[in-house]
Image 1 (cartoon, one colour):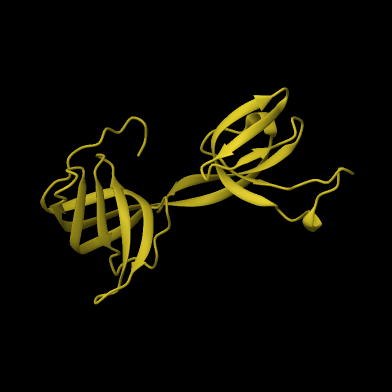
Image 2 (spheres, rainbow, N blue to C red):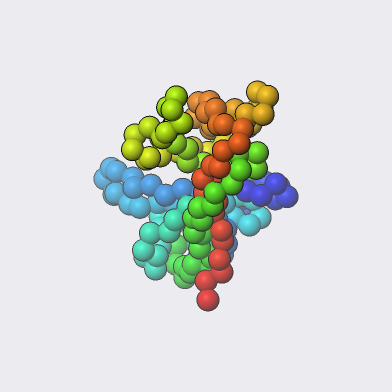
Length: 173
């Protein structure tokens, strides 16, 4: 949800939903299904079976569909959707890698880093040593220390370039 979107109570009944795919998951059980969590443009969230018109939507894709919504008993801003129909993809996200100076890392960025040994050579044959999403950044002198969403800390040299993966949305024509 964007910072400007306030959460709103989920509607009830047959409604058109347009929003962003937050996650997808295969559910097991008596009736296995591929489901998705969608955050609607108006702020409510809905858990619904992925409509047959979609292959597999990706996290961040923008979708539109009609479904019957039933509000959750525990959270009025959450709904369970059934019988989705008329689905269409209205926007996709793509990952774009860019190399940025360590001082330009921002909270929310996904970063890839390489570990270096004492001889200033990359460890592990120049393969990335890790990847994670930035929660916050502290500074020790001129070196950023990044706290990831997994609660791990990564120290990055103050004058290094870091690969940042940002998602860009594109309208589907």
